[in-house]
Length: 424
Ligand code: AMP
Image (cartoon, rainbow, N blue to C red):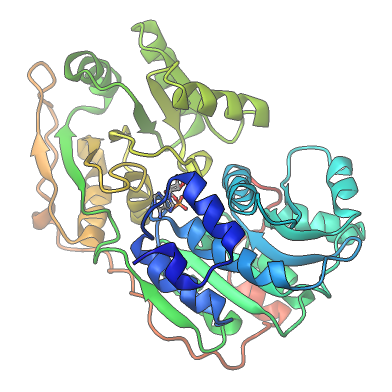
């Protein structure tokens, strides 16, 4: 299978060639023809599968043929949960569209709105946005939707996790009804399926992720350790295993900061990325990590969304995530593009319930190890002895695409999530 066989325009094939892609990935094989045909698509796909090109390439092909965007108008809208992901998606639009004369822009919260308003003035073919800032721009009359042809919700599950449901519903109500809708999500909890039911018309369903959602090429295991010994164990592992480019997840921002201090104190070069860091600090931390200037990047779940670092060899869960599905998002950072990766979790006795929830979700019991010198005094109970097991999340299935396009205010409130603004 080659990219040429999709019938993509020559300028796109040239850009694909320049990007060094020779064969389409599984999601691209399924999504590109579907998007080209104008169908709605609902796809289960993690970061690292090539999902961005799977929607950007056919969208650009379709947009290349149409009329230009009028002042303040947009023709395609990509909504993302975080500014990092927004920036990356727009970089892909620029890269794949470099031989076309389409205009793209990226907007997100936490920075001045005026330059973004200026950018919108001449019209934009593809706008990549976080939901809160897009609404701010709309309220200031800087963006108009009447020319919109296509909407993409990227990492839709994360957008809902971050409380964007009301913003998304507000945006949907502003868009022209005749448009193409594409929804990409790593997981399919009930709230995503409800959203999809109201959004997508007779969608093509694509599920190329392995049964448990975690990439199969990732070797996963657990180190049992007392909570207080976790920082020392991590330092020791980093020293003894020779791991070079390691992404470490903590549950809280404070946890991230204090771990980074501890690693720094042990002469292990470390950067931190979390929601309290400014955009420039986050960009620098990511750039230093990507360039190999620092060995360890400590991140919280939200801040790590959208980070694209290919072939990352190790991901470490310093704490297990509260939400089991975040484990899959975390592990999705490693073992990409066919390369082997390792997903390692430091687990203390108090985290046994979280471990059980993860094992239920991924459908496997994780191998446990202990390290000499860190044998826990509080051993982690066996998860199979736990009586109550959390429910398995549902798989995507065809959605009834009728009715439900807009919910009433009362129904929205029942969703029970607090909206919050700006891309984080
Ligand atoms: P994504 O899942 O969109 O975050 O993409 C993950 C990485 O895969 C990005 O670095 C892309 O540049 C790369 N990529 C996308 N499509 C292909 C392809 N067909 N062949 C090789 N690499 C690709």
